[in-house]
Length: 323
Image (tube, one colour):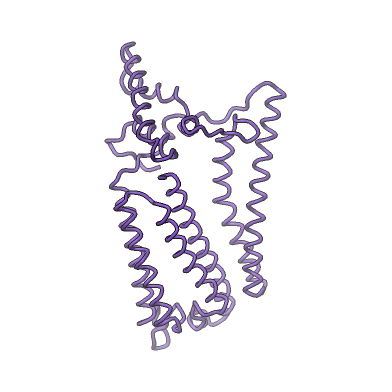
């Protein structure tokens, strides 16, 4: 976690952690109510002789995990089999899915490619493997927590996990950070567009007395032109998002449609060996260039599809929270 700015108090960060998952229309009221309650409790501790910093930490620690408090405000039950370990289960499951599934998928794709499996077979094995890994991670993680909770009931004693404390609070994202995010997204889009155009008009590397492109030369001009139009629309979406200070469902739908077009087009081109330039790999790696080209094509497809899916889901998640 990055270091908080000097203007962010623990109370600011705690309130932000509570209201960030609540519907937009609830946040102001909950923040005001919570800030007043924290101030009252801090005043009582100050009157008893505690220092300001110690009183604030003690009050926030007594309030407990902000995710649990947010669930109470949002009337959302935190139940797996029972509510005791829901947050620990959910956090661990998300962490394992983010780590294990991509690594496992990469290993399956690489192993299949090195074994000489055709591109379609590698893609199918990777997708099937990713789904299987995700199911196993979810099942076994859940089973462990079910066993722990049932054994606790039998023993009449709770298993102790690391206690929440105020040092776990996330930083508050200010409007300036949102502006930086939009600028970063636009700069990234412009940079990618510039690299693609340079690759097509000049080349990626200079070999054997000539420039050679990383992408297939057949993409110019129509497919590259279509990609530039899509990127221009994406820049407009990012600007509108910043002006509205939030993701909306219409913007999320447009963003998802753009992601689907890019990812779908890339998969089709990769399946026809028409996205990357095979001559590039044969020139760079004379021996084994075809194998490397096949592996890179598969990994590129997985990366493009995964990135597009994550971007679309993230936009819908933020739009739902803002609604």
